[in-house]
Length: 302
Length: 302
Image (tube, rainbow over all chains, first blue to last red; front, side, top):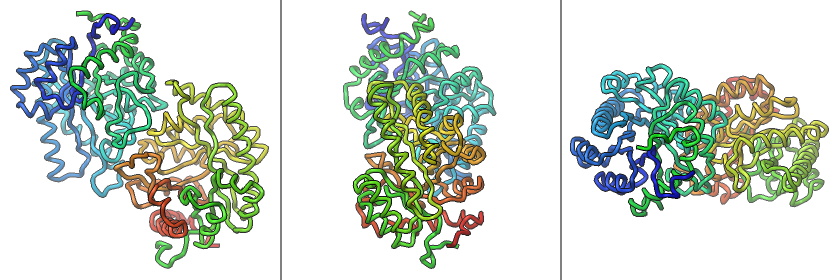
């Protein structure tokens, strides 16, 4: 049942580079490919560290599929130079995502993950910040459409609502996305952020029906939370999220693309990158692959 | 505009005893009354420390109104001795709430706050735990009705969903309450737990329409969160919650009873109880009273 028994790696696993945060781009690509993983999601900082053209070339040479570019957004501020600078930077991120997707192996996807940002300094106006997210996405849609990039609005757990992301539920992300073409604006469905939602299964189903599941990301939640709650993500299976049910719900919508594991965790970041990738592949095989196999979704045994 | 300017205390302010956690019952009653506050919400442990009859007598002597009894619940476990023990203890809490409400000054309310509990050990089944909350409340309703007590289901912030309270949104609390008489089952509306919800204003309005706002509690949220996220509550006005808008929404439903300030915060707990009560009264006057005055809701200047 689980691929881990014979050491095989699920063909739909993608390593999100944040999981091996301290590896530079060449190292991240190498350890991912050497582990037999077929896909990777990249982060902007390590890409920019080597430059976009070099990053694209390295990605191409790796033979890996490219699944998402992480991350842009952070456009909750009112009109002014800071907002203009953010939107300009988001346009750069759109170009990066398009370039990397073109450089990745067949089956790569041009998806830019958007984290909205928190309340501007001194503000208590969540509703206003949320409206400005919608406005910013509206401004970026023509650029994303021209570049063939899908903007993937990521709802973050409500504990991050004021300092990181005012988009707090999948339903809210879908309400924002509803104004736009689903080829251009979708949602990031991340188990960690939405598993607690009493409405999560209905909203996953709705996201599929509306063609909005741009990417599916998995990791786990457990308590007590660490002192820095940003680093409270765990290997799939190490916590209490019902990953089988959530994954089955995503797969039931027809989602047939790669699935990223994205973990922010100080202990995991301190470990050797190659061993983290192997451990991630094993965790994925145990916790996610069975749900794919049941749905006939792991058929891509290429 | 604000009562703090002339030192007056808002007649609708109630001090939730958790705000002065380390004060025993006589001290809590004394510092609350001496500050000119007219109402108090009590916790079970300090009441049980002196015994219910003594507590009722002390409360009566204090001249304070009694607003809520905190807290019971914790009934997400499957059938078995632990569940039976929890339900038996909830029945004791119902009797305590009724006794204390009868001992409090005119205008006291017999409200028992219910915190559902988290996932049972080893379980990942949030949906099942949530169903068992509904079942438990169903078992308690006849006892509460007979005692004249309103069970106030409290949705807690989603960061507590797995280890403390599987009821995570006001909408979810109202969905559970919908099966029961609104005189017997309502909701606790606490700004800290629900302010982030994109649907919060609609759900407050719904709660009022359905007669379910058993109690309204206020405190504030700010980041970074402390290492123990349970202790991340602040004086009203010290954080980023839009208390004016939320309070106005609650008052607009016709809510005309006392408003508790309930704060869990290590620094506040370490301070002198009398000064904490005075500081709470000032914060309330600045952040909450104006919303009451605008609505004509602070008219009880008794």
